[in-house]
Image (cartoon, rainbow, N blue to C red; front, side, top):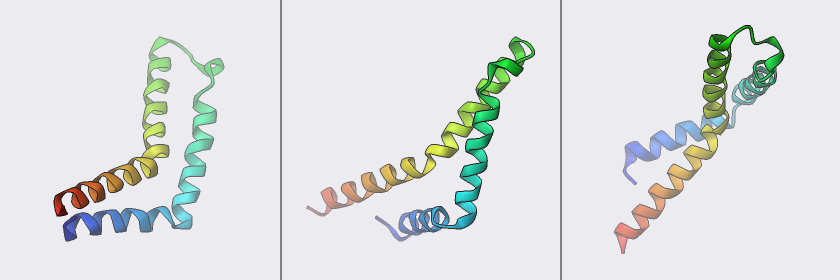
Amino acid sequence: MNNETETYFRHLNDMFRTEGWKIFLDDIRQGVVNINSVEMVKDEQDLYFRKGQLAVMANILNVEAQVAAAQAEAEEQEDAEAV
């Protein structure tokens, strides 16, 4: 893995360990609970808007796992190239 890629993953992992990141994720989780209710949907357009909001929130909530998988893949690729 080159230095730029290592720095990229290090900065993301540093961010994931902060208290601010944990608070942010808690806020997103609470938002999911509020948005995921169909009781408050006004019309079809509102439903699709909420669906989009939930998709973005799901991406945010999964970013740590996505970064971990990308980092593992980069490390495996580096190990394979070293052989």
